[in-house]
Amino acid sequence: MNEREPETELTPEQQRAVGALPRSIEPPADLWPGIRDRIRQGNRGVGSGGWSWRFWVPLAIAASLLLAVGVRLAWVRTGSWSVERTAGVPRVNGAPMGTSGTLRVGEWIETDDSSQAVIAVGTIGHVDVRPGSRVRLVRAREADHRLALAYGAIHAKVDAPPRIFFVETPAGTAIDLGCEYTLETDSAGRGLIHVTGGYVEFAAHGVRSIVPLGAYAMTRPGQGPGVPYLEDAPAALRAALESFDFNRGGAAAARQALAAARAEDALSLWHLLVRVEPALRGEVYDRLAALVPPPAGVTREGAIAQDQSMLDRYWSLIRRIEFRRIILRGIREIDPRTGVALPRTSNRD
Image 1 (cartoon, helix red, strand yellow):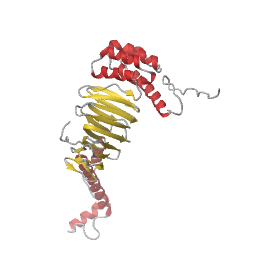
Image 2 (cartoon, one colour):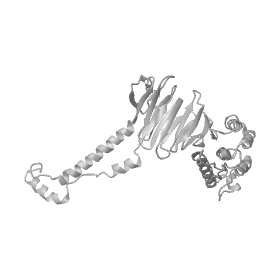
Image 3 (tube, helix red, strand yellow):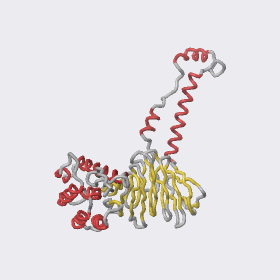
Image 4 (cartoon, helix red, strand yellow):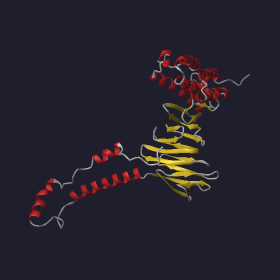
C-alpha cells in the first residue's frame, strides 16, 4: 500500500463528458450576416439589439458542463468521506476529532480501547470502526471506494453493485459483492472475516475465497485466505482446514476435512477441490458429489481438470441450497443435499 495517492485518471464516463464538449462556440449561422454588418459599421454587437439568447444560451450550457467536469475532477483528486464519533475520542490524522469530521484520501482514523467511529462510504454504505483499530482512506472514486485496515476490526454494510467497495488488509483484499460483514486483523496481520449478508470475495497471492452469508474465513499474511466454513461447521472440520491452509497439513489434513464434512459443508469442499494437489482432486470430488450431487452438465473428469464453467455451475447449486437453508431456517426444513423442502412432520399420534 502506498501512502501517496496515484495520479488520477478520468473514468470512461468523464472522458465521454469531456469529449462531448464543443471544440469552439460559434454564433448560430443565421445571425452571422447581421453581426458582420454591425462590425463593419463599428458596432461590436454588444449593445441594444446585439447578440441574442441563441448565442448566450449555448455558451452558458458549455460553461456549466466545464464547471461540472471541473468539480467532478476536484472531487476525484481530493476525495473525502464524512466520519462521526460514536464513542470516546477517535483521532483523524493524529488529531482528536469532534462529534463529526472528514476523512480525506491518504488520512488515517484511529480508535483506542474506548473510542469508536462510523465512516460514510460515499453514498453506498457505512463502516463502523471498532475500538483499537487503524483505518486509512485509500481511494474515494465512483467505481473504487477503498479502505485499508492496518489492524483492529470494522463492520461494513454496503448497498452497491459488486466490486466497488474494497478493504485492504496485510493478508489480502476483501472485495464487496453486495453485502455486510465484519473483518478483523491483529498486529501480525492474522485475520478473520465473517459475512452476515450477501457475499464477500477475499483475494491474495492468486488465491481467492468466496465467503457467503453465514460463513467465516481465516486470513494470514503471505498465505492468502483460508477455505471458508459455516458458522456451525464441526470443530474437526475447522481444525483440518486450518491445518491444510496454514500449517502445511497437506493431503492428510485434506482427508481429515473430507471425513468431517457434512452436506451443509459443501462450500468448504468446493474450495478444497481447486486447492488440493491434482492427485487428490478425485477424492475431494467424490466426497463432494456424495454429499451434494452435481448439477447437470458437471462431470467428474471436467471438475478434476478444473473446467471453470463446470466449477461455476457446481458453485451456483451449492450457494443456492445454502441460501434456501438460511432464508427458510425456522420455517421449513431444507434438504442440504438438494435444497428441496422436506415434508412437514405430523404432530398427531
